[in-house]
Image 1 (cartoon, helix red, strand yellow):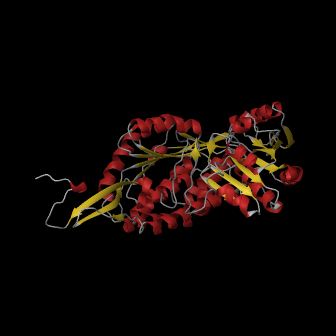
Image 2: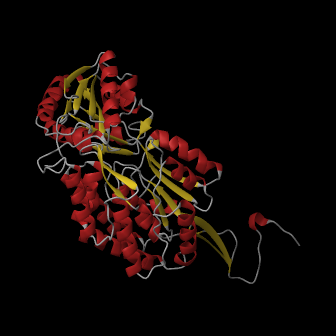
Image 3: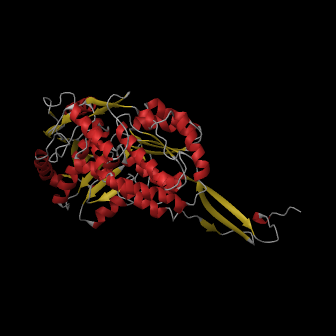
Length: 507
């Protein structure tokens, strides 16, 4: 498949045209870069869709004044129609995900499908935004808990999921009555423009007010301004821990609400009873899929000493069969890293690991340097480590899998938990006691704890999120809608008397 910028630009333009986006990417001021060849392939006039930050917030604030009064099931119609738009343009949007992020075809399609699934979930949820009736100590009184729209929600997304992260937030925010101001990664301009066009089209078809989906194109400063504006009560930010440390204090300083989904450095435990066919399949995808750049990527494999050699050997054989190449080629399983600096970080991490006594079993080397010298294609690296050193505890967004032995489950759980991050975890075991310990209060300390499937997190309806340095936020699923609303308690006196609480007499 092609690495030529003109060809990549033509694919992107064709996809936008198929969506009737009305956007040209010939010579606009906003550069569009592709990790497929590591070069700027086009330019787009983003101001045709995007807005300055103050304008975006103003428009969202005006829209909120009207939208909050629309019943939630009617607000759900916006999300339903968005889902229809995504179904109609699934292939085209996946094209843009491939061009701007470098995902293989099935993963790009899967990300758009995830958007569709979240829309379906949110539509159903729009009829379930329930409160509670609470027992009151006062006769003739009713005490109730209700949930009300809170205001514009700011969404700051990372490159690795250029559209799904927005949808996880936006679908719930909309049914909750909140406009969504989106500040995407600078690396995913086309994805954000196309998605915004589809969302606005759905809102218009539903008869919703304009201003529900403002888009802000900018760098970290735009994100900082969004996070610091008191007109935006909720900020949902996904990306690196470094980004989270910058955003969270700004939001907290103004007593705003933040939903943070940061990093991963996820682990899986392979117990003596593990089904190794499941292990190889689950581990290979979790560690090498998306070139190791998912927040749920597997980076640490903790294997019982009795199975260590066999597991390493089988995964090494699986790794040797992974085809690294142009993601537009349907036979490719591992595409490029997002840029050359990511490749450098991968090399540095491997060097530090080997200095700590680690051994590279397979991978880690650069490839396709002749075809795409400006891109960063790396073979997934499998390393054995004597123990969990500092570099193992440090997250590197690249396909590096560190394998470490353990002797007791207590030791394995300690290794699993002894990292600053707390997103996703997994155990492979057929022993009920081991699985129950892993998912119990003294087991994994992560936001996601799986058994026999690897550290996957995009289960629709699940409360996807992390703990510790990965934030503790929940973008979607279960009762995560409450993060996009304000809670209000109401006491209604339907009697002719006014009894005071706690037996107080004031006469």
